[in-house]
Image (cartoon, rainbow, N blue to C red; front, side, top):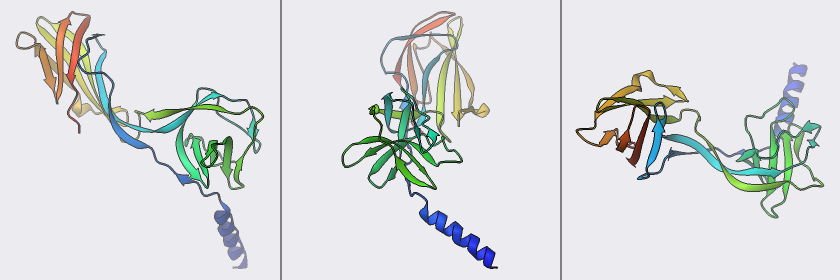
Length: 226
């Protein structure tokens, strides 16, 4: 009984001493990947438009950084890596990749002090929250992080699939979690003698010219938002 109480006390002590990092969640938005009313060309099998949801967040891009270790851990990021705004600890805004969690630490990345804008590498673990002063300062720039393969994100594609006579063919596909939904894949065919403007689920495309290998077109409007 005494041993059980001692172990429980140690666990409570370790938990109470653990670094409290406030988690910052990614935000979600709807995107279109092509501009409207601009003449474009694509070949058979190309996606004319992709639209859907993506997760995004303010981020920093590492421009220049030296090789170093922090608390005996090799710092895992290099130049051109993009780190989203992921957490807060006291006066520090924390930028790190949440997927990089190891047995010897919880988070590792770059911290920016909210009071004086100091930029330092950091690591947080059961041992505490540690930053490190470097001889050569880390150079960063502000950017944006986005992830179109996010969990439960919805995506739609419209693909050119060739022509038969005066008819043009397309494939419409829907995805969730970057996996195609078979029940929502459709093959479509349009008669250009009837109209040079085709439509599906709010999408409107003006066909300018078409051959067996490519298509010239304008996107007039995107899919109706879900």
